[in-house]
Length: 466
Image 1 (cartoon, helix red, strand yellow):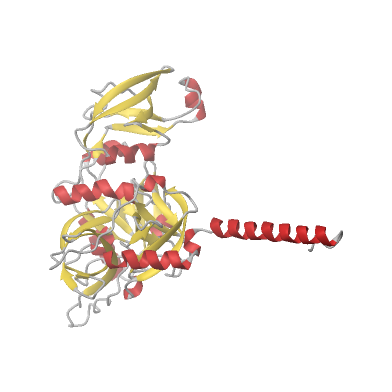
Image 2 (cartoon, rainbow, N blue to C red; image 1 turned 90 degrees about the horizontal axis):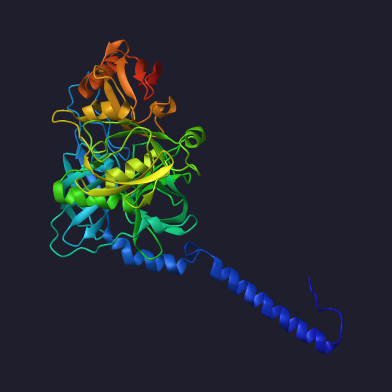
């Protein structure tokens, strides 16, 4: 609408000029307010600067191995044919963090691989050595031997990211290497129950099959996350995609490079949420922290002075919000490190110091296997303590699972213990796999499994085998 129609010629001219100034200022403001992702020049410059540090990962595995979710290979031959099963190939993404040839990708991209090849942006293919892998946060570290130094990218401080900020992903979807997609940070600290340490970055930047292991960049060209999975009913991106935060991945990457394995901290306590009723009874105002419901006599918490009923409100300088956050902080802290802890006891704050022990890993011979969208391991002593299981409990424990799997849809979560499959006890990952394969060979499309939940209750679940 023209607001300068009435009045003198001089007034009209002045008003029109003023209107143009306001319109120009508003346009400039709106342009400056647009996210960087909406400015093509910024994205093209950014992509050109970092794309050579992004690599394609190609793996070969036996046909009878469980392929990763990005598998592009052929199904094995039918059992009644004499044709030997063909090797399965799968594709993924990765990125260079050290010019000498250190590359980061997802653990599921190289899972069960017999051969791993890294394809650089110029098409050069290099055989890779696996330095270490961690299935809990889905990270693996590879080494290649290039003839010249590789282009690298560096990690950003992912704690500083903000919901709504623009991001860019580069990867190898469906074997189409060097593919750039863009979006925003949709949410932070997402727990989608794939492992005890979930705190994913959620983004609507497209992450399709084959993008796994590639970098999620901020607009400075630094890596804020490792693209890991997308929730989709169709196989294509629907804008629900997740990346491991850089700050979660970096200490794990450092340990894999140094030790070839992960060495996580362990506190030795059982935890529960602090309800309003418990907070009032313990005289904690306002309610904050998590309650210690039990102290393992073999863990470091007891000697440090922690007791059942204490409320942990701060550990290693970080305010504690919930049990899962505390588990992540402890797991990421170096083993053997003296860590300051603040607990509230009888309404008063008490400062303690605890020396973290090493979180127990499965003993030699206790493998982790993948089946039906779940990662299954034997029940270790540490898991018995953490889950509050009796010493005589036998079975296998779910350590991680695909959030889109039928098992997840039936309410199975990390920490669920499976004791029977179709009326037969299973006490090892091998026994679980053999039982599942036997049922499949019998033509069964589903099986009844007996699960033991973290609260000690048992229930029967019908699980799809196809």
